[in-house]
Length: 281
Image (tube, rainbow, N blue to C red; front, top):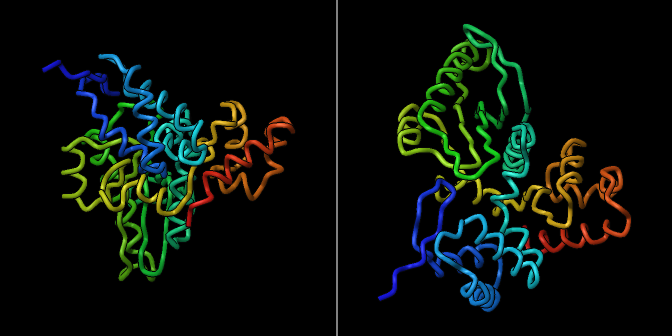
């Protein structure tokens, strides 16, 4: 039996190439069975041992984009989140928009007094008796993870704020909780500590039915960085102008001109945006 092809993962470790896993990822992006199969079959002769997962998925994206631009945009979602950087502020606004979609009143970048010191909280979200203090740990390179030091630090900040907040008039019976959200992953120890300490832990793929990816797919709130018809500089200008979602681009097409997208390409960008959102709720 021939040795399996080994793929280099983002963290540097090696794993056997799994055609079924690649097919499943294409199907999750919205590609139909035939399209996913065609992309994998076209890729197989080009896969060599040692190929990085980043290059593999880039090759798959290029093939998928020729067949379905909307599916291709969803397929590169993880990279699109990484492209929100280099600062974490667009990611904080992005998380805020997801919580708004779930019915929360949201404020981003809020200075909050603790019992001991003042803190800048990335996102404050409130709905009824629920009050969440959300900290966002953003990475703009693949393979980075949040280790246990991160929830330890966040828990200390949350406790300082919560102790003072509960003493304010009207807050005694309201539910308050700290959240930690990352666009990558938590180590096992980070997850274990965060859950034990009562933090809500949200990463790219955890928890299974409420992960960041699941929430984005469920809501259709895709970041504008999914749009491969935009250049990196154009995306940065749109983000600097306060836009963060593909839907924002569709609702404010004039922002494309303000971001110096040339007129002949504006219609292409809008077509890509419509293709991405066509089957969304």
